[in-house]
Length: 344
Ligand code: NDP
Ligand code: GDR
Image (cartoon, rainbow, N blue to C red; front, top):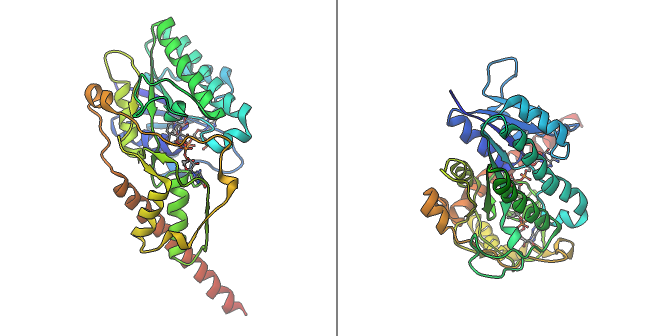
């Protein structure tokens, strides 16, 4: 019989790639979706079918902060695996909304673990918690590995540290298969447009097409270990397929500054970034994480996982996608222009 999985955060970047991966592997996939006044399912539209037809993907309304409804859902669908990817995931925004961030990231994870604990009394269930390199914060050791102490620098990171420890607490207290993937930054053409890499590829391609003149950014000196989201969801799955539950760093083992990423992206478009980029202090954070560099040795040895896409290739994928988007935008704008001139 095929396995089933519940993904929280299925409408997000990682959730959409993970859903594709699990469907390809023959899973029945359930996704938790927040009700909103507009559709939030753009990233999964291509894999979603009318629920009246036979489909291996089912979406359920819910919210990580509503523990009772989450428990009801988990006990109803009895998934073999739960991937907790839902979160207020923007570090800068977490300074503006610290309590809400704790509710979704921290209490949300606890709600997932509680629901899983109740199901665990009935049947085995495996839980993946989306932990983050942000937990290392003002780093105590470089490169960062599973044993590096955490030193979080934002409300988001503090909430992720809480969720990390609760995951281990449930594993040890209730003998549950619950794991943390400590993922370093991973990006894609589906990355939210307010995260720095996508903000850069969207702006650079729009500038190339004459749709935008300036790009306003914050700290260009921050260093990140950037990988491709499509590679990283493979690690999430592998983490839940081991004999014993454990925690893993998932990273490329390379780090670059935001400035270097700017150079790479604008360079691929034959543009000089310095002519277009301005610094806006609004994008500085009250506390910054200056350097992240992961050591993925354990993931390589135990999971057989390595990052397949380097930063240059990742930038290429994102630039190609966003250039296409900008071209369509430019075409639509010129069409609207010619259309209105016809009316004159
Ligand atoms: P996104 O921001 O793209 O997606 C977040 C998802 O969580 C969306 O589906 C969002 O729904 C959902 N969500 C937000 N709040 C709630 C809530 N209260 N209840 C239910 N669902 C909610 O994040 P990513 O895909 O990039 O990341 C996935 C997870 O991995 C997150 O937990 C993130 O913190 C973590 N992470 C990400 C890394 C990265 O580099 N991408 C690195 C390390 C960890 P909606 O579409 O309605 O907004
Ligand atoms: P991060 O990603 O905070 O690492 O969290 P983000 O892309 O937001 O920032 C990376 C670095 O770029 C600097 N920066 C800017 N960032 C944004 N968003 N906008 C700007 O204009 C800008 N200018 C410079 C930031 O200061 C920072 O140093 C991401 C999220 O996906 C988290 O959910 C995840 O846990 C971590 O990655 C690992």
